[in-house]
Length: 360
Ligand code: ASP
Ligand code: ASP
Image 1 (cartoon, rainbow, N blue to C red):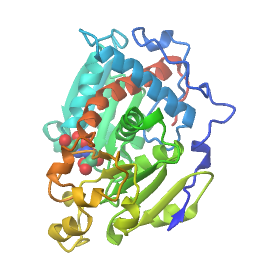
Image 2: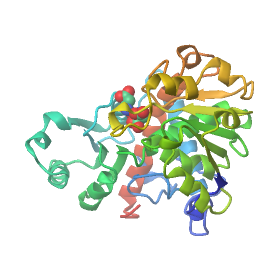
Image 3: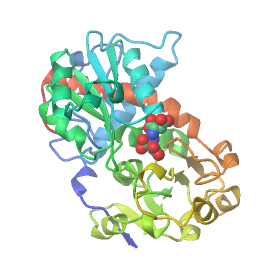
Image 4: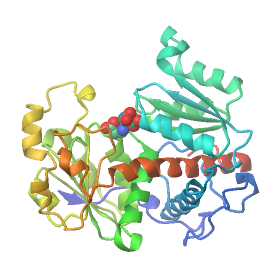
């Protein structure tokens, strides 16, 4: 089924956009964000659906500046000195949590890490009470992950600082989508996704990574395909059919059609922990029909870029040799995560300092 996604406003920068369309005005990231002329209007980052193309460019440009910082002998700037960042994760995570922690420390922020299982949350404290307590203890920014879709929106309603969504349920994983975008731009010729065939392969149903990537990839002009067994595509067909200005999205169970001449293939983890009902006959059958193997990749473009958000089930959604193939950027995705998260913390801190916007 082919169609376009709704919310056309996210695809273009309206006249009221505070960011220049060429994305040229990138902040000098050694200095505190409040001293910068660059304006970023979002106090929170809960998803990527409301970001204009110009705002995506600003995140990319700021990430370039952070990548330059990370290449220095001492990869650290004083930009967020005195800013307290609390990382509150209600779900297991290694890479995202550590990546945010390293990012905040590289900006000289003070970082507090809370694993919900070992805090009062396990004694039944509500999310709202926990967030209020964290604020009373002096947090300026809250990075949170929760298994319930929408939880960071609730937190943003009560928290006086900025909330950054580190993944909520099946709903959104904005920093992952932005690091995927950054990784692709640095890999694709000309750094452009315009007209590129990008395939998201696998368990889209349970994937917040897929849901956030739909917005960013189509906003940047990609020809996006989502492919997997029909039971794991539910909801996406409707999205593709609803349609709106200029976005290209195809949803299919035909892996042959999806991989044909693909410029990018992003394999998704089969989320066993979220499979409440029997949506798949077996992992073996899934691997046989939809696993990303060298054999299958032959149908793609010779320069295809292979991605995976991690953690991988090798031999299920992706073959072990494909994961380490020279065409794979899986390690770069992890590395770029730090620079992207530095950029996000920096931009959000600037919006908070400027007191621009409460919502979004
Ligand atoms: N889902 C986890 C995360 O995003 C993956 C991991 O822990 O490695 O952090
Ligand atoms: N690490 C990603 C997430 O947290 C993808 C995954 O877990 O499969 O959503």
